[in-house]
Length: 252
Image 1 (cartoon, rainbow, N blue to C red):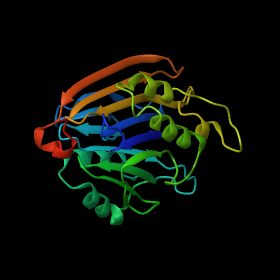
Image 2: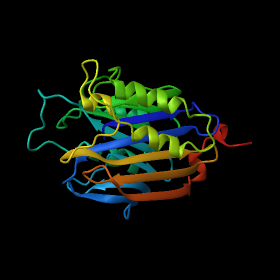
Image 3: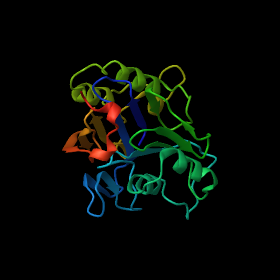
C-alpha cells in the first residue's frame, strides 16, 4: 500500500475515516476483500505470504502497513512478510501502544510503516522511526518515514481534511485516491501521484472505511487492473461489537 490517510477523532460524524491505496505487483496473487473465514475481520489478503495490507475487525481494531523505499535495505530471501504484522494485531487483543512497543526488538522485517488502532487509541510503529501515539487529527503516510512531505502525502492529508464535514465522503475520497500527476519539483511520479498507473507495479486497489459514532462501519474497496481500469468493487456494512464503541463516541 503506498498511501494511507486517516482521520482520528477529527470529524463530528466519523471518529475514524481511512482512505488508502495499495500499490503492488499486478502479478502477485491476492484474495478479494471480504470477511475472513478464520476470524471476524474484513479486508483483502495476500495469497502469497498470508498477511494483509489493511484490515478492520468487528471490534474496530484496524491496522495498515506500507513498505519504505530504501534501496540500501532490500529484504533478504528469508525476510518475514510485513503484512503478517497487520494480521497479528487485528486478530489479537493487545492495545495499540503495547503492540507497537513489542515491535521495537522484532527483527527480520524489511523496512515498514505500521498504523495501529485498537478501537480507542491510534499508534505508529516502524523499524526506521520510533513508535509513538498519534493524537486526534488527520494523518497520512506513504513509503517514507513519518514527516516526509512528498506531494502525495500532503495532498492526501489535505484532501481528507477537506471532506470531514460531508455526510457521506465516500465518493470524494475515491476521487482523491484516483488523482495522478506528473513528476514535479524534484519529485518523481510515485511521490506525486496518489494513484499509480503502471503495467507491472501499480495501484491494485483503493479502500475507504467510515466508522460512525455508533460503531457502524462502511468498508468499500475498488480493485483495478494493470491499465488502471476498475474491475471490481466490494461494499460491506456492519456494526461493531457493542463493547468496542466507547461511550463518548456514541450518538446521543
